[in-house]
Length: 468
Image (cartoon, rainbow, N blue to C red):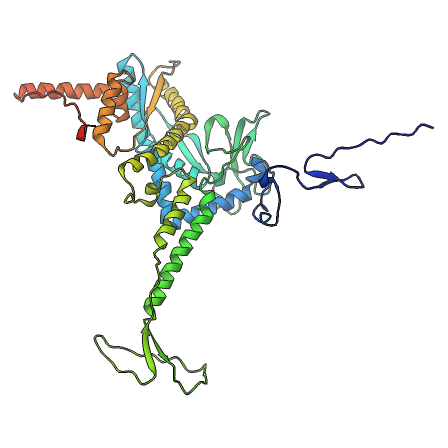
């Protein structure tokens, strides 16, 4: 009789095979120290998991993180100021649209119409709210709706919706919560609650509307592949915010205690050693500018105020710097204080910050501005009898952060123009000025100066101070 051969089963890495043929977690054999679990690091890595992006960012997790971030934003002046500064530096007063067309009349009419529409819908304000929400709440949605009350032929209205309103169900928060996706992971539609779940008059209702993906903007910064919902960007700093506030309150409490209990009366020769808990401690009121004689054996000493310590500012600055790091914000912007900076360090720190702002602005252009302009142009073309007109090429110009040395900035602008690396139209657009309007104003000024007999001066070429 032939014997059956036993098949050997190889357990995957990190697992071992029990006698009953069951896989069980085993010890990891690796050369990386961080792959080892020891008594020293076991508690530190206790919360590490292998969850997917959507499984890790469930509704319960996202709700708790954004609620705590909103609390810090409302009560922590540093967090409030940092987020507001990033929003203002990113958006400013809003990007300027430049239409690239050889038809100057068409170009000016379209740019003027868009500027009027952007002002009517408070576009710059909405963009700042979107940036704040991305940092504080993790994400925000904007619905391309219609507002009949808007003046002009374009009724397009970007309606902002907090992320709380986009959810599949309070009972089924897993996966791409509130978002229907196709087989390739592309959003198809969004499930939007008609009222905020935290509102006074919602009554726990689950009334919702379905918004097509082409009519919805989902603004967030994904960190992982196949991530469909965002978490607050300030999440890594929330625990540090607690430390910062607790330490500040502890310092103030200690200082107040020392100031309130100004004096202590001590004796080393008391004969009555019995303590009566019913008797209150006696108080000795000292008048101002009064010298008194104490009984024999008594000594009067003042409580020393040892708070704040000399290390308090250093600790506070280090914590604040760590909080701002996860947002890419330099310390002087986070603290609102540049007293420790010189010119070079200030410029160096702001280089990485300005790069981050440029990336965020490009992201806003791609997910929101370009799509909004496409819908705006369609309505504007229909209203002006230009149905089917091709959409022109456009460019967005954002406000630059003010330069510390405007003379150097002006010289750099002249060098770029001389080298042919830019044009006057683009440089004017960066200053949110239409170049044709600028030329018309210069022509009108020249004519007025000639009419009134005022000598016309030549343009002044900027020069650097100290020869550089």
